[in-house]
Image (cartoon, rainbow over all chains, first blue to last red; front, side):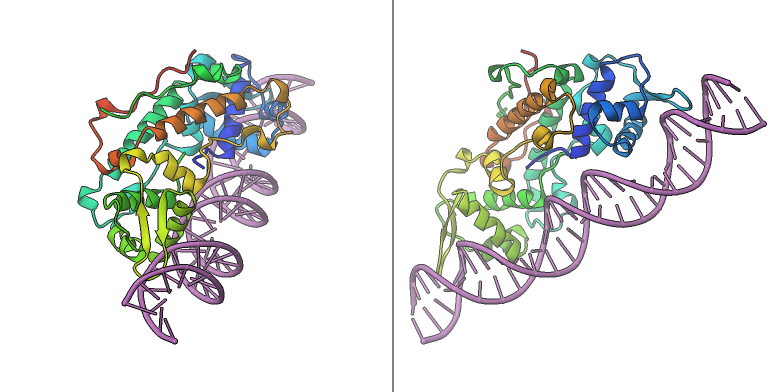
Length: 148
Length: 148
DNA sequence: TGAAACAGGACTGATATAGTACTATTTAAC
DNA sequence: GTTAAATAGTACTATATCAGTCCTGTTTCA
C-alpha cells in the first residue's frame, strides 16, 4: 500500500514533540511518555535520528535529546530518510536478468522519476506543518503534470 | 524505504507488455515468457488485475488476457491499487490509543494530505509513459508547494 | 471427450519489521 | 571517588508481510 513503516510514523511523532520544545534537552523517557510510546522503541529511534544529525544527544545525568534547527527547517523527507534510508520506489532493475527487454526497458528511469517527485513532495513538508492541522483539501499538495 | 512491492513492479511490467498488444488476447504463459517472470507469479498478478477490471480474461482454449483501454488511459496508480490496495502512507492513528494528544494530533490529517498528493502523482503517470524512456530530469514530475 | 487455459484458494518459505534486552560508556551530583 | 541517570551500540527474538508455488475446479474450443 505504498506506506512508510510504523517506526517512521513514530519518528515523526517524536520529532514533532521534540521540536515543540526546541533548545530544551528532553530525555528519551520523557519523550516516550509524551508520545505514548515504549521507551526502548523511542530510544531506538532517537539513536537513528542522532546519527543523521537531526537531533543532538547529551549523555549522563540530565542528558537527553535536543533539536537544533527550527521545526520549519526540518522536512518529513529527512526524518523518513533517517529511519528508512533513501526514498526510492523500486529496486526495479537492480535484480534484473529477469527482464528480457533490459536494453529497452524504460520502466526503471520512469520509476526513478516518480521517486524523485515523491521525495520532493516530502521535502516540502516540514515538521512545523505536520504539527498544525492540515489545511482544507483544496489546498492540497499538487503535482504538476508528468508530461514534458 | 517507501517502496512498492516487487509484485507491483512486476504488475507494471505485465501491464506495459499487455498494453503494447492491445486488443490481442495473450495467455499468461506467453506473458510470463515475454516478461521473463515465472508463470505462477504472472497468473497471480493477472487474477488481481482482472478483479480490478484492468484487464479482461478469457477462459478455455486460446484464452488469455487483454486490456481494453489504451495504455495512455491507464495510470500507474490504478495498477498499484489493484495489487496493493489503496495508496496510503500510514495507518497512523488507526491503531491509536497510543498518542496521548489524540485530540490535537495533527499528524493524521497531514499524512492523508501527503498520501493524496502521492496518489495524484501516480494517477498522472500512464502506462504509455512508462513504456517510453523518461524525459530529462528537468522535466520531472513537480510537486507544488504544500503551503496553502 | 480431452486438452488448454483461467479462477480461486491454500500453503510454504523467505524476508523485513517491530520490539526487546544487555552491556558499555558518559556525566552530573553528592 | 562513587553512584545513579542517561545515552550508545549491538544482538536477539517474535511476528507479520511478501513472494512464490501448488492444487483443485471451471470454462471453452476442437
